Amino acid sequence: MRAGHPAASGNLSLDRYLELGHIVVSVTGEGPAPVDVALARMGRERLVRVRVPSFLAAAEIAAHSDLVMTLPSSLARTAAVKGRFVALPPPLDTDGFTMSLLWHARHQMESRHIWLRRTIVAAARALFGNAVGPYAPAPFL
Image 1 (tube, rainbow, N blue to C red):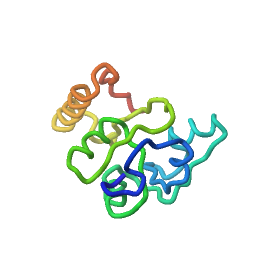
Image 2: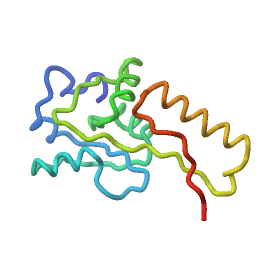
Image 3: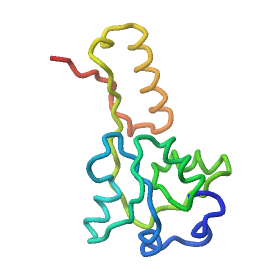
């Protein structure tokens, strides 16, 4: 949430968290986010006000509103360091999430594209360690 948000001070209870307006990041714009799956298992639901396709868009909206977003902890820490945001732990346990790297088939064998994919995977490993799976491009049929 943005620095100066009314809920930024103190502990964030589950009830207070659910009262806040939320931004959800969804590339497809469909389906539940991992947070919503965890809440549904508890019989609870959050108030989703906006769905956007990227974390960058979500951050800009959150920086200029009282909407909040639930991010992977590494992104939340990075955003908070800049001073625009306050990172609080969510008041629920969430499952992990899968991050995938996708590209068009015509780029599969391009050396520049192969280098880029390997560089992205290496950067992810530097941030997340063993949580990043092996780099194994799927065959195209």
